[in-house]
Image (tube, rainbow, N blue to C red; front, side, top):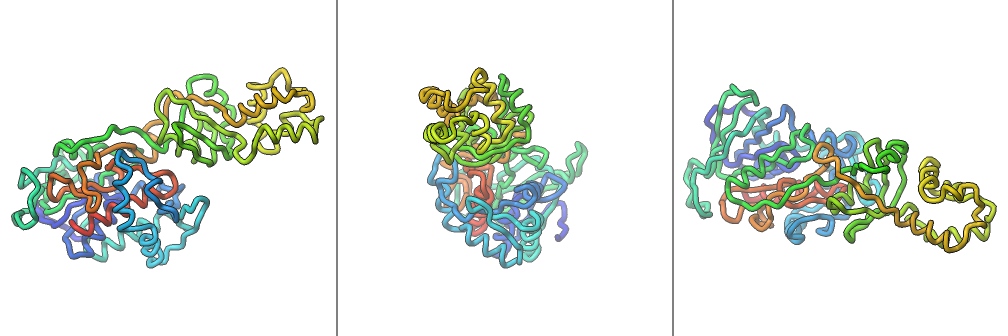
Length: 422
């Protein structure tokens, strides 16, 4: 990457060298724009490298607006149609990166998430993007304050000056660079150890853009009642369930942990859960539990209920459920259960009510819900509707995808939309 002096001039400055920032930089540079990327961390793409268990679930075959949460559910449609999953798949294939499909249309690298990062960096290198790491942004100064104006009205010095330090120490050398277009791709609050921060929200607030309340998303649940000790005893046990909350349902794996419950099913429903809510877990999503118990009672009356359940559920979980729901009937044959009692037990198996005390928070959350209000942003270009040349892309916006590659696709799509016009 090319070195720059202390007082540099660029067409575009991108804040953040994650998925959205790097891709936007490459798209803009391919159009002949002079691009600088500033990254606070000591390395670029840290979240890319850890995603998908190190394999990067980079998109999904089945992308629709219904896979995203936002105060404006229609906002994401323009970007998703302008740069689709098929476009990104074509880019991946052009770089010879082997990938595989897993369940629900999820696409992962066969080898390593490092392949996706290397591809993005190669695209940036090809078009002479300047990338600087360990750059702590100290402020953004509008050089032409006021209402939005046409690009023809901007002066040669650009619209914005970014003031930053070379390093994060208190005495780090101060630098600044000016640009015509400033792209905020700083990510959000999730997983601060990988560079998550609220800087993008601070910039939005500086320019009086509205913000939607933020909270952790795609995050495990914790418990403070007797469920906590049950989870500790079952730590490591996983099974497929259907989980529901606030009218939303997902059928995925649930994983018990020493802190509570996790796994894809829990992460998905956490986007909809609010403090105080219960979640409903169907432990036998592939069965009509009552009919199955009745048929087993007629055909295998001498079997114990726990023995029957162990055909579909982990043995350790069945033991815990027995202690909760039928401890006095543990030694009773299935034939000795009345139909009414079986209906009651079927209702518990299909509608286990769990009431989390909290989520694990931003420390382990994969995404941040909320963010820069899309009412202030163009859905076609990601530009502020009142500040010319100021763009917000990726997770910093109030657009959050389901688990399964959707958040990466939003990064690619929103980055491309901005990169085409900055």
